[in-house]
Amino acid sequence: MSERVESVILQCDGVTVDFDGFKAVQGMDLTLTRGELRFLIGPNGAGKTTMLDVICGKVKPASGKVMLRGGVDITRKREHQIAELGIGRKFQTPSIFPSLTVYDNLEIAMKQNRSVFAALRAKLRSGETDRLAAQLEMVGLQGKADWRAGGLSHGEKQWLEIGMMLLQEPEILLLDEPVAGMTDRETEKTGELLQHIRKTQSIVVVEHDMEFVRSFASKVTVMHEGRLLKEGSMEEVQRDDRVAEVYLGKRRDADASRSTA
Ligand SMILES: Nc1ncnc2c1ncn2[C@@H]1O[C@H](COP(=O)(O)OP(=O)(O)OP(=O)(O)O)[C@@H](O)[C@H]1O
Image 1 (cartoon, rainbow, N blue to C red):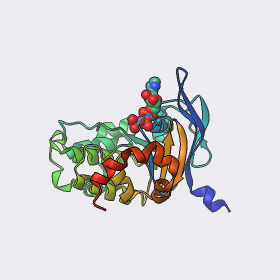
Image 2: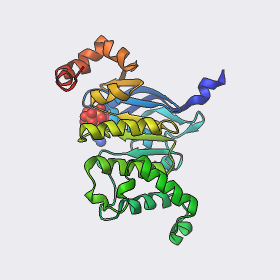
Image 3: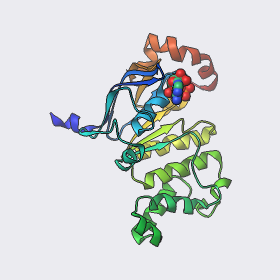
Image 4: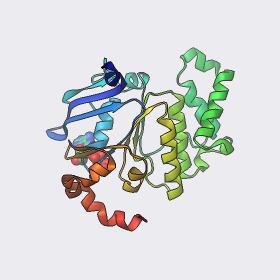
């Protein structure tokens, strides 16, 4: 009986966010299980980014609860506490150090896990060197370890930042439009990377690129005007008339021109 309960890693119940009287999110529920790659979609202004902001502690809800691993109430915790508890957030613009090498960026990310004293000593232990090398390979940058991060392509910068997040060992990754501005090939590689990451971590992705969502989503949550509109497989979501009306319908033409199917 407890198996399903234990597999829940994040639970948002009745989250409402009030920006000076404007309810950006209204009574939103979201349950994420371990190893899930969840896509959060919906038209502009639906409240998707605000939900990520609530989960990572950047925005405090007026009401509702956010629970981590069943028993840890993170609703009122500060951003850094939530990060320490295992929730990593990646924003649209990469926050990397452009003048440092790819390797140095990863090394700095890894050291953030240490106590100040340990960080000051600044030498990676051998296990850490291995982990860093494995991370470089996982994000496909093993051939560019010595490159200045600022010289990477847009897609590569995003992967570097994902690699930096992963070195801090979050249990949940929150990604806001990770493939925005990427080439088709980069988008494909990002999808593969997310599939790989979900073997060990859970991921919530806010996304507008429907082709990408179709290719990589198993479960999709649709928001509209701050509320949960529909949740299910991409097929179920696409079949829903209300979704078609408020969201997919508006994009059908654009999608049709992108899709080869
Ligand atoms: N700090 C803020 N103060 C006031 N209103 C805000 C604030 N942040 C967001 N909003 C409003 O809340 C609503 C939800 O915004 P949010 O960014 O969460 O939507 P979204 O679904 O992520 O949209 P998009 O896909 O366009 O990024 C929008 O109407 C937005 O203008």
